[in-house]
Every structure is written in structure tokens, then in C-alpha cells.
Length: 365
Length: 92
Image (cartoon, rainbow over the protein chains, first blue to last red):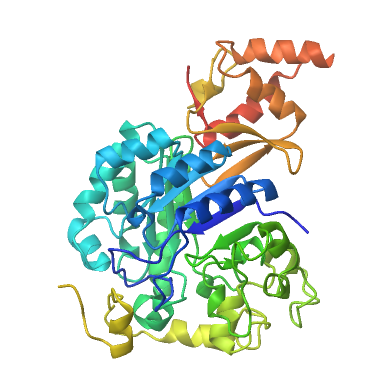
């Protein structure tokens, strides 16, 4: 069994933004690990073989102990990436995070212009984000600008690239929405059309060539259009270990949505033991769990059968081939979703669990 | 960018990269945002020479001498070029 090289630490699910494409859980408990528990996790993860740390959420800046966690990670020589919306942040705090050892900031922006970006985020944040990008560069940190693409912004990839270039990004990540959590519930309003996607792809291919040596352009194609599934997390419990805000040890950020799997928490047993033999982490590791068409497919060593969460949410059975694969007997579900030229308006995700239960009531205006 | 990967260039690693030994797997990596570049022995030798004011030509000459090979200039240029294209190299 391979040791994980990357720890994705979801420090909290709370977030000041309300992006309509959010793939985090639709409802959640507010409990989250204390500082010393996270510090222990960092040490355990590094000893297990982790080299890269992603501090994410939710919005990790909402943790008041973020500086302490960054320092603890750098003390273990981890490469520290902060995955953030940039809100709420001051230059002084970013400077403190840089001093604590932060290496890289991945900053999300929702669109290339203020009004679209703020509308998608459900809160005015565009101007703050631009300021944050400037501070990141001024402090000598690596900067990735991340755009999540969907029907409402995918026609603007050229403007997004221009914006990221003007912000002196080292990397630009244009990742299509992953249809999990809130995003799956609102897929019909998010999924781009085939024509939109072809245009965006052409723009990105030429940008990659134009920016080579200056900016690394990463483009994640939506698997709904690829014909083959994503190599989700590079395989279940293989390279990535995810720790949820409540300490659950997961193979990806959405795996807790698959019923019937019991997730162990850090602190209950050593992380190395959980990684090695937790039944839930072992459930879809390797190839033994596969049935046809994956079992005899030559692609299985490259795509690992695709996304288990997507298989579950679209077929009801997490052990089936990801329907994004055109060899899946359930592939028609993907084709149907693509065919829905839905006119549904995108809805912002709700801030609170209560709103989700009550259904549809908007909060925080 | 092209001028950076000439033999006369004195490139150094970007401040945003970190050279690190992976003790669990006993290998060396260049850590960069969200990923790592695994270095074989030759790549590690090249990376360790960067940033000391030496030109790539001088680095290639000393590595060739150590390895007892006639020339490794092409390999040095190719490898440093691959790092440069991802933005992991800065001109001195």
C-alpha cells in the first residue's frame, strides 16, 4: 500500500461566501477539531509520508489558530498551501501567515468582473480578492488564481486569464464544477453546453502555449463531457488523505456522502493504522472491488474506475463504474444531464443548516 | 524565457520551490505549489548546483567530469528547461 503524499485538512466547513457551485456538504455540524488535535494530525501525517499540506475548508481563514497551524506544518517541513476565498483577510494577517511559513496561496475568484463574481459568490468580495492577490505577490508567496467554471462564467475564460495575468499569478487553475453537494442539487443550472465547453477548451489550449514559462495553466475538464471518468483523487485512499473538520479520515472531500461506510476519526487510533486498515478506506482501494466493465478494462490503472461518490449519487451504488464513463451501462444519466438545456437560475447556497432544513429561505441579506 | 536556458545563463530555483528529502520513500523532491517533482540522482545533482552563481555550462562541465562522461550539457539544458517552463526557475 502506498503512503499518502498530500494531506487535505478541512479546517472548517464555515464560509462567508455562498457560491452556487459549492461541492461541500449541504448540511453539517459545526464541531471541529481543536488546535492541538490538528497539530498532532500534522505530525502524524508527515511521519506517514505526507509532503504537501492543503489548508482548506470551508474558509480556513475563519480559524483564529491558522498561524499556529501553518507554523506547526513548516516545523515538519511540509509545503503549506492555503486554499482560500481571500475573505476575511487583512495584509497584516497574511504577513503573519507568511512569517509562520506559508508557501502558497490558492485564491478563488468567481468570475473576471466584479458584478458577475460578486453575484456568483452571493456576497461582495471581488475587490477584496484583488487586494489579497497583490499582498500575496508583495510578500513573495506563490499565487494560484482559481476559477471554478460553469455555465454562467465559462464564456469568459479569456478575461479570466487576462485578470490572472495582471495579478501576476504563478498558476491559473480553471476547474470545472464537480457535481457533488450543493452543486449536484443545482446541476441543471451549472452544467455548460457542449459549444461553450469547446470554445473554452480552444481558448485554454492557446493560453497554455502563450503563457508557457511564465504562468502554469491547469485546466480540469468536466467529466460529464470527457467520455472517460476522472482519475478521482488519483485513486481511493492512495495519494491523498482528507481530514474533515470533525476529524473523520476520508479518501476525498465528499466520501462521507456514501452511506454504509464508517469513518474513523483522528485521535481514536494512530493515523497510520487508520490509513492502513480502516474498513472504509480499504473499501475501494486498489482493484479488488471492481466489477465489469472496470474489472477487465485496460483504463482501470489510469482512472481507478472514476469517482465513487459520483457513482453512488447517480446510480445508487458506489461500487459501480462511474457513469461518466461511456462504457458504463448508466452512462445515459450523464447524457440526459447534458441534454437538459435547463433554464433554471443558479441559487446561492444557504449560510446555515437551519435554512436548508426549512428549505429555500434566503438568509443574511 | 528562451535566454534563460542557454549555457551562459546562471538560473536559480524560484523562491517558491523547496528541495526536500522524503525520508519515508528515501527520495528527493522539488516541492512546488500543490505538487512535487521527484528528482533522480542526475536531476538532484543539477538542482544542487543551481543558485551558486555558476553558469549552466560550468555546471554541465563539472557534472560531466564527476560522471566521467564527455558532455552532459544537453541533459542539463533539457532538465532545467523543463523546470523553467513550469515557472520553477528564475534568472539570476
